[in-house]
Length: 460
Image (cartoon, rainbow, N blue to C red; front, side, top):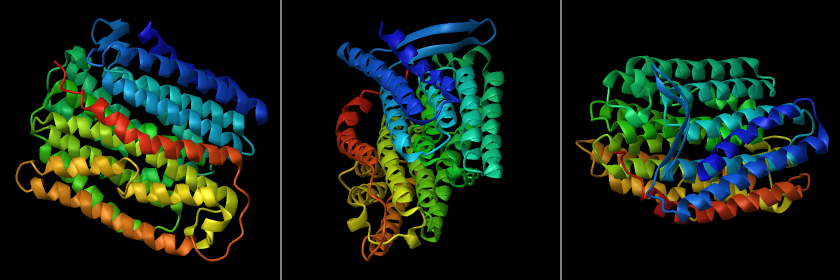
């Protein structure tokens, strides 16, 4: 029964496609109800899974072929159950948020958001590369249309093309592995693993493919929040986590994975001070924070199980903090009519709840308590000190310096936007409620998820 609940909860978001032509409160209510049911069923499956003991793996193959083996199935284990619940929770909260954030075009937005959410859930519960590729293609289509809603067709096309290159790389790995594309039966192949590294980089906007993500923030803020926190971008790291967990590759590509990630994070340090648009600042932080997960995955290539554990811990904690950051910036957009930080003054008086959320989330992205990235970054620094060669100081140093530079940038903007006099619209109660829920979840998440990720190990 549990595996069926997972399957249904993953497929229900696709029902939102029927809302394409609806508008107003009707679209809001139906979208909230559909994603609410998905969240409820997923929560029931989560409870059932952990009550039976989280050391078990439940797997059902629904579609198989002779040459490729499984091409559609559901795997319920500690990693997928945690990631899946976080993803659908954030999707539900962003749909509730969108009900007040959007004025028009709601039906089309919810339909595309449902496509994105359903594809993300199908991706999360997969352990075969064909399913990864199909789900990613659906996410790419949703991304194309969502960015186009912001009248940024060139940026939408860029994101679509980059993600489709990722799809082709995954299919290339399928061609190399054959039936081994079913990760439960896979053995390590260096060529396939290399293709999958770069496919993951495409999804996560990593070096040298990083430019598509900041440009894609033209999409509605609730969609950007989900893409950055619990959909396409973190799922690149999640896919590579799965590949490493099952393939157990050697350290041939340790320096490729770790070196490119270090170079990318250093580049992001240069970009932070140059941003005045809050959405683009968040986008560059997303790239760097996902990079931290890739650093720990590089560490896992040395045979350390802590590498995959901390990678998922980083991903789920970043998901909540990043959703909160985007939600706070959306609050600024509603109140001030802009996300240009130069034009915002007097936040603490005009939008108190938004200001609290902004302050907590942006400091949280720098790794400041009480939100969970403090812990995941601390574990990353402590663990990667045991990496080989210069990586033992380079990896921890880059993570620490990146956090310090982002913190300085945030504090400089804090001085500009929190004080002074400004005029703003009143904060909508729905927006405030979502902010409060995300703050609470963000504080609780590191404590709950730590014990969960510690149960994760290499397969077999």
